[in-house]
Length: 232
Image (cartoon, rainbow, N blue to C red; front, top):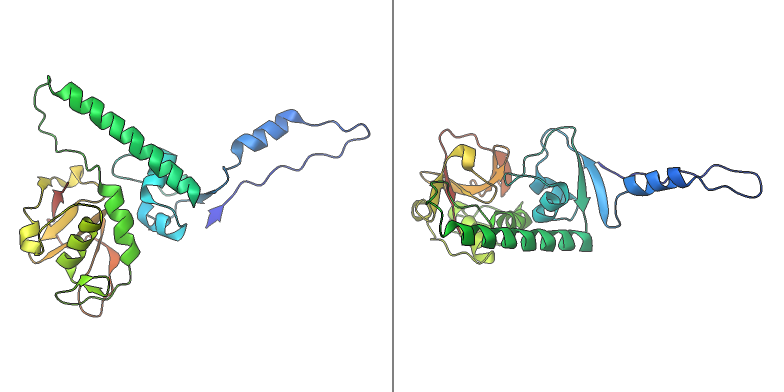
């Protein structure tokens, strides 16, 4: 449940009134900005779920709270959740900063030894923001539109909306990018098994179209040995 910090009430003073400037300054510093709420993390929360609940975006929440690339959050942690225009501004700032860092890193790496680390998933948060819009969509075998998805139709559609082209079948999506380890997996990566594919959310969960009668949803990764694939 979102919580906001209430403004402290000024004490009543005899005439002439005396303003407690120190208390006022403390109250102002602790109050969230307009267009923001605070949320105390509970078990089962993910950044994607909070973005959907509070009409925010994953990028904005990550930027507002200085989260790492995996968007890991801890039970009991208090997060600032930008909403509306505040979310747009936070996400835009985060994108500009990330672009600047990427350019600086690219320039520096031209003369540096080649690294074996996989490329960062710079589009992962945008992919998840799109994916969460379709929670509850029915499963349709062969479906690849918001009227109904199968697993690979869903992943292909979401990536296309983010400006990234991947193959249609789950078998072909296995080779759509760079395989990364579970410890390197980031939100927005593909999660793949033979015959099934979804999009990694973080915290051991993924979003996917599962089977007839089971609407598109976020679930724990319950199958052993998934393959994580970084696309884009």
